[in-house]
Amino acid sequence: MPAIFPSVALKNRQREIKAIADREPVYITENGSGKYVFLSEEVLERVISDAVEQALYENRVMQALGESREDFRKGRCYSSREELMAAVERKRSGHAAA
Image (cartoon, rainbow, N blue to C red; front, top):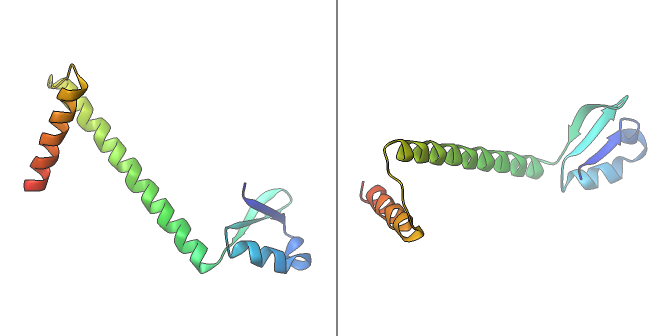
């Protein structure tokens, strides 16, 4: 669960907020609405890296789904796990050779 503090905590609990911000983002609210985020540079780099990794993963999933739809449309269907794994291996070795 993310650390969430009201804006008045910036005055009363600075040390605690800084300690948490060294490990994870700290969200500061004003009147119950999100307003600010505090975090260390290392945490920011990790958050960005995680977001990039997630976006790349989602892109690979979307590509795989598109390829599977194209395979199905062209009649490339497999009736056993072994047939599927053989087709995957052929595809992988084709990409490796290219």
